[in-house]
Length: 176
Image (cartoon, rainbow, N blue to C red; front, side, top):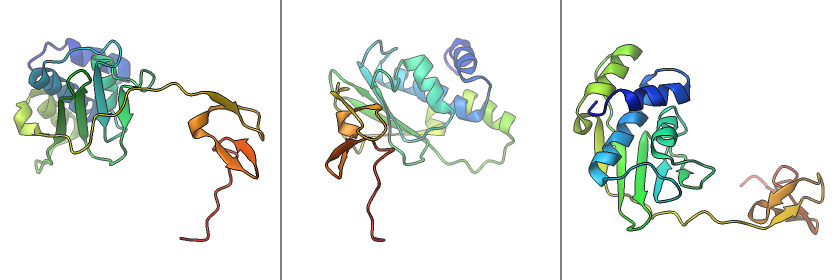
């Protein structure tokens, strides 16, 4: 790993343990920094679209400042070990995809390999195949007329003429 072990230690402390998945995220952040010239995102200057909800996402949060709460960490559930970083100001983006490995390794060896291999050996670097997500929006709050809980208006549904939250909404389907 080109960077000192400081990033690894910070990510491990945040995540709670060492694992190959966390190593993937640490190295993806390293690649994004190196190839895009980006640093920690204080607001929404940098956006990360993660295609997985695995350990590596914790490294993206703690090392890049991309979080769900700020609206600059977007979850796109494909299940792939892929992270797309965008510069909000320019729209520039880079999709970083973990290459499949045919090497048989136990967890510890896999982690060591991921932390020490050249970035080009472990990742493919591609143009994003989707657009930069819009900035986070604030929505008005409505109160569910069934349970009484507040919900942002874009998550409310109309059912029997009432505004209801998604927990109270009864989906209608006839099997299609």
